[in-house]
Length: 555
Image 1 (cartoon, rainbow, N blue to C red):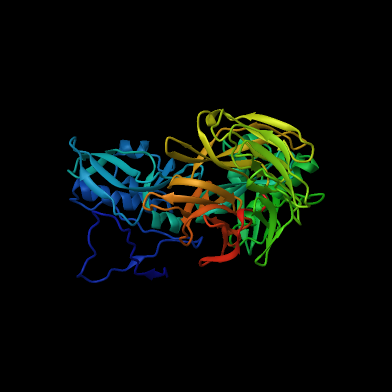
Image 2: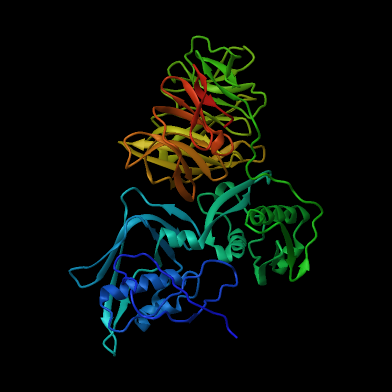
């Protein structure tokens, strides 16, 4: 006997009919939910609906279709519109806090307007909306042969409130490889929770996004595909069945492929092991590559005390270097423990200097009119450039002194405020402004076999919800801490900004000058305008040192 239950599904949407206050409850069949994901129960058109009510009901049915097949949502459309409509092209997400308005236009169309939060493209790429952005969708309706209103013209994709998006989708980090296959390169995507594992493997087969592709690749053959067995998760084991092309791969390629797929799937809830097969036959690997997605250890906090390099530990500040009369600012440190060297600006920002923690004098390694604060990557290259950009960045090898100037055309004419190279060295976040318009972009870094940077890729924007940003530092694979301001605030605070993920805010703090970070929000250290350092403890900010400027963890 089929199990029955009373099911009530409600999406909050302006224009929705109110809940009934009378009448007996009705028994309905519980929607099938083999995967354990959220299921929304859509209802078809109500006879006699007005155009506004029909559109409101369609939006609910379309949102519910994300966890089904959209067959109910298509009942609201004319046959021609149902054939043309592709709901998978885009998910447009609006803020629950502001109910959308439904109104008629002068042409008789129905317009739905709401405060935009983000969009999700058909490949799972999440893009935040700019502050005060409005999501507008228009629907043209006509009467069918029975006199009922039906939607004849509509935008592609689906419009959903953020609560529905959060209940159905999960953030998924997929991994590609650096050209030398020495590190994993992460990319954030969002997939329906019910099909998360399969979608993640399909994304690996398709390769990295265009902006990331110059610096990352997949070891999986381009002609390979999932078989009909696909990805099956049983008792914590994900079995991935790939087409026959993978069976003849070279051993090194096969091991790299395994590192990508296992690294991706082992991040997903409920998966403890991964088995790769081809046509049902288990693949054998000579060995497995242990690649860390976020190559970062525990390092000593450094800073500048009276213009000289110093280490900070247990509330004690130890001056361990010399700044001379250069007026050093904007310290960055290399990936050494204990800290031995770094880079800083001097001479009013006109010089870039190697600095040392053994008492040695700084050594100038580059010069300019006014340089941006440096970032040191895990391969020992120091990055900087003119604050008033001429469309290029400079990179200097701390060990050899070799210098490279790399073209970055989009920076031409912009003011560069801050830059930070990711831990694996394949990406860089750059903060720019032009006449008060501030942007945070990520670019890829292509390197040769020796790790020397040779090309900078095209930018992709993220963190659009912030209207002002002064400094950034990496805190995880796809997130950075930022000193910034939202449009609703008059002062800067600390935010965690994701490349392909939403922005979140930490506890408020006043007069922040700059920051550094390691792994996770509890490693964030900020400096205020009185040269005091504070660390984040999950609930607020704790004073850890005084008389220190430019706090620096490696990066």
